[in-house]
Length: 197
Image (cartoon, rainbow, N blue to C red):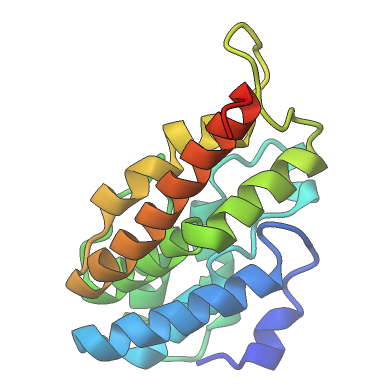
């Protein structure tokens, strides 16, 4: 439905939601899709287009629901393909958000959701949390009385919850190891911050 080379031109953002994120999610999604028996073409198209509305311009324009906007843009990009397949791609894109949006119901949407969340876990997830903090002037380790959100807060409020949100058996299995790695890392970070290690 869409090739990697063609999808790349819709991404201008670098950083935690850049095209390198898309390619990692694609590799995970293909692995999960094969294991779960999902339609690879639908999964690939949804992954390649899932973050096309995550731009500075969209944020400045007040567009908060990047998933809904990305689904609308994907519908235009995929015009000419069978409507039911385009709709499946759009459903997967609309339901890939962690904090809001419709829950992923169809298998392909669940694969995209799990792959996207797995990229926020493990070593990559930790690296992304600290990269985001650096881009936004957040503290390395925020203090209890500090209003600014940092990577440790991101772990507690989002990353530590991702394991329980997985929707496929393959996603759950991959999330276990990544979750354990994050827990060990943040425990060590806390120990070092206290001077205990």
